[in-house]
Length: 172
View 1 (spheres, rainbow, N blue to C red):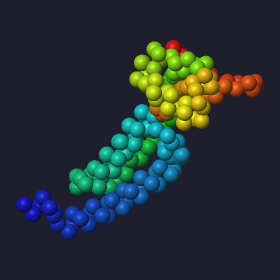
View 2: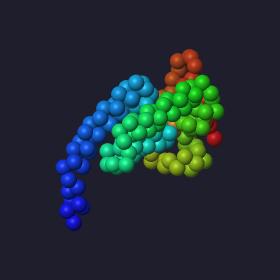
View 3: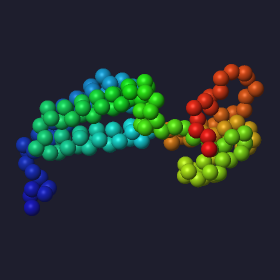
View 4: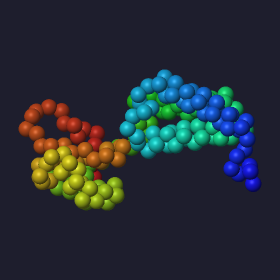
């Protein structure tokens, strides 16, 4: 029964030492990999984050995993994430596979009902995004876009000439 609540001082000391070292390794690796590793999360980033957390927990709590093995696993996950993001900047099909594409939900003040249904976004969520951007009604928005990280972007109407920010946005 004692083993359930207390496994001994040696076990606690191992968790403390390995925890500090594994955490330090993870922070160093993340800093080396650049800001993209810690950016706003899309589905791919969430998977990497969960995998990193799971690996760190395993290294901390499993006596069967040595610190060097855990550090290698953490480094491998971060390297693979770096490689995939590097490829996604250079190869369009990799980018689409990893992050998806933004989706137009409202255009010229009109809700795009098929797009809302496919994206599983409610009319109220679009209205909330428009309000949050400081607009009083839907007609004041040129567009509302569901971004690849799940956030809603509101594009206000503009009479300024220039390239549109809606280029590359998937429309229904």
